[in-house]
Length: 317
Image 1: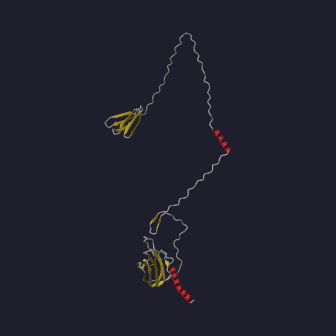
Image 2: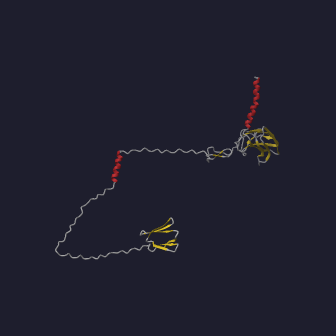
Image 3: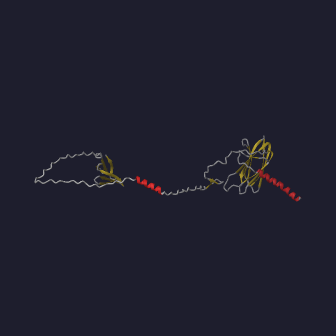
């Protein structure tokens, strides 16, 4: 029993130290406006490895109070390349800087910060791991260090989880390379259901037939009437010559021809050699230019063609 008790007693400090590290590494803030409050004299954290080609740094912010005097800061890192800076919360005035390079094993360094008056300080851990393994850091405070009381974290900007965000369809990986967009789902096509045709009853068919018969146009009946026959009485011959019919001079009405308005307009074709060909527009049926040939067609059927290369000017006067 004594052996079991001694083993349990020896395990308890290890469990307590593990729980302390877990609590200290929780709620690491990446926003300088809302840093993580340091409630104990020791903080620790883990910086995960990024994708290959991603050169971005991981940044965490902490805040604590310092009284008048010296503050001792001890830093222990493993597989970490970066910086650890201490600023004043009022004005962000830099107080000290620790430059860390990743080494094979664990590296340890320290800094001393002197304060003339009590101030609130901000500690920034910024770096990355050079390989695929995660980087770790542990920072201990002593001297005029004052731990902050555990309070509820200040609320940041309220974000409505139900608010819809516009999906641009552009996806990027952690490096910033644009990934091919996924095809948008195609909505299913609406299938139109044909309505069953309702057969008409015999009574409805009969009514439609009656309507058609009533709307028909009346047939036109043309009757052939017998033509009237006229009897031509031949004059009786008396042996005398019939008198000559008198000539009736009928006055023939002659209409004056209307004047053609195109008679005074002429088509004038002037050739390059000086010849001029004129034709009244009242006699021209058509004239056109097709493939470099001027064609003139008159109303009497005559067709005359001129090469456009020999024609200087065509006018209607």
